[in-house]
Image 1 (cartoon, helix red, strand yellow):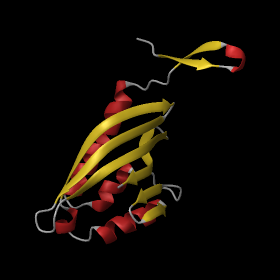
Image 2 (cartoon, helix red, strand yellow; image 1 turned 90 degrees about the vertical axis):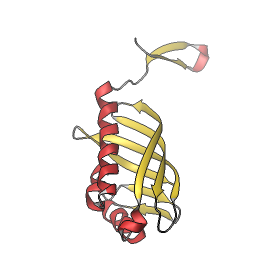
Image 3 (tube, helix red, strand yellow; image 1 turned 30 degrees about the vertical axis):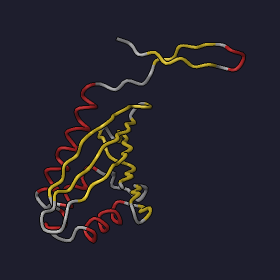
Length: 145
C-alpha cells in the first residue's frame, strides 16, 4: 500500500506527494540497536551501550542538567551519573512511537525505566532522532527526562 501525503501549495493547488516510508528492515534495525543497548546497559557496559550513538562532536544529548554536545562528553556524563551497577540498575525501554519523517531519518518516542532496588527506581521519557549514516542507523540527538 502506498502512503500519500497531501500538500497544499499557494493558490489552492493540491499536490499528491508520496510520504517517506522506510522498510520493515529499517524499523527492525533500530529496534535491534535499542535491544542491544538495553543488554549492554544491563551488563554494566556503558562503552558498548554508546555504540548506538553517532560518534561525532555534533551528537546532542538533552537531559535534566542541560545540553551536552559530542560523543565523548555524553559518554563521560553517563559514566559520571551512573558510576556503578547499583546506580545503573536494570534498564527497560518501551517504544511508544516510531516515525520516518524523511529519507534516512527516524524519530522515536519512548519510556525508559531503571529498576534499582538499593537506591530507588528512576524513569522518564525520551525522544531520539536517528540518521542513517554510511548505511548505519545512529542516534544523532537524544532528549531524555
